[in-house]
Length: 220
Ligand code: DX5
Ligand code: ZN
Image (tube, rainbow, N blue to C red):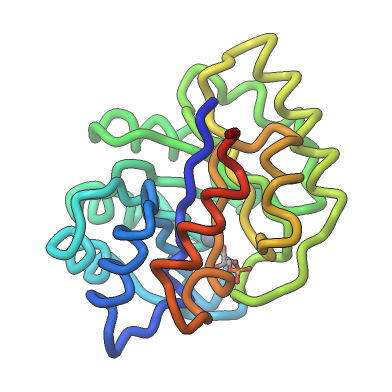
């Protein structure tokens, strides 16, 4: 699958959000990743549907909403109507994930699921008829700027071979600690959506950084 670079807006400078997003677009960003955290499912609080609506006024690129919240069903309708292309709750939380992905699809968005580093890959299988993306977390979710956990590479390979057998069109995204040094290897292991927060936005020149990151995963 063609690699896509998806900057994670959590690391953007919110005082100049529009500028950061436009620069990422100019550099060739393919989509944007929005981390929603409730201070309960993860220890951090970020933002809600308002930022998705704001992003919609800045860019036409697809917006993927990564839900790190304990009660996704309560908020899924709002994120869909705010304009999310993908809504991606976590597979681990204490609710019926099948019901959540069904709700997302019924509301007309695309569904994905995110897996924490310790969650068995096989748990994805029963959901495959409803989902079109899996996020493999390569850090414990909650904060940007953490160190990439290399076990994620093996997990991506296992998932890719499961998907090749059962539903090859499902995207694999890797989230956490994606940098210049590891992005090519992550792509080579089978991930087609490369998420990067601090590597993109904590740089002087966002446009140039995005262009360089994309170059590292695009074949000549
Ligand atoms: C972490 C979030 C990530 C985060 C990635 O819980 O899900 O999307 O923004 O940030 P970096 O790329 O800095 O690790
Ligand atoms: Zn995320």
